[in-house]
Length: 130
Image (cartoon, rainbow, N blue to C red; front, side):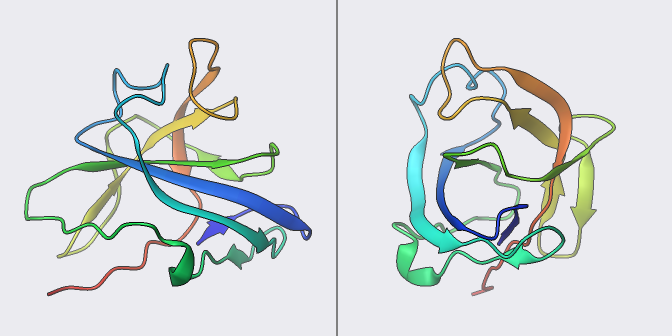
């Protein structure tokens, strides 16, 4: 789930890659599609959910493994919070750590991508422990 100011239909795409995002912000190469959906925006301060039926792949994450995620909308209405330092723990529990990352000012990564750093993902990560 993510935060958007929109209360209209929103096109959202989620991509993932093994390891850090560092060095992989100028191209969509090495990123795999995780989910694609058109969802109803819930507005500022409320979670907008991506239903499970829109997830194109599942990921098994092993202890110590790092995955990066790139979440984008086709309009500039994805909300984030300014951070302190990229790759620093923002939220951590006994199962996983969510690190600070970057904000991206373009739809799809390219050599023209405007980077805003550091940024914190405003959303929720749902997961299952096996």
